[in-house]
Length: 177
Image (cartoon, rainbow, N blue to C red; front, side):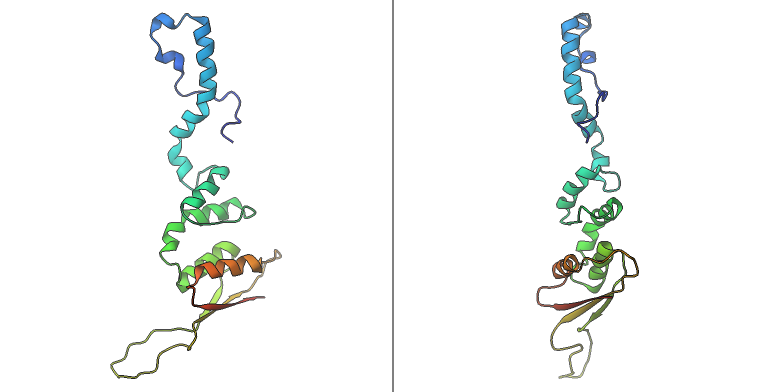
């Protein structure tokens, strides 16, 4: 925590802001030194605001707040680098939300495993009237995860994620092997 650092130097000592006539006052020097101790974390946080707003360098406790700004919810038990990656690419990923690519990226960020995604839909173009529509009659997505690592995949968390990433009218199956 930034406030728990003892002896944190202030970047702008208050005593240096006063006219020279006050510099010999012992009480004033001690009083302003106490204020410097209180204000140092605030001033240093403001001086380092660009680093706080960058998910690559933000302090871990600030990263959760940053995640709320970009509407992502990385689990606190994930490694910090995976949480940083989720926050870093969130705005760009939101533009692909509801697409196959967006779902694949979200599942990869959550699990670290590249998913196999099969859709029921499709697109086609035809000059012939009454051409059969591509895909199945009911929109559906199947997400397959092949876990090759010893750590288990949290299926409940993954199902919640998939529900938030696909359109509301699309059903899904999750297969973890």
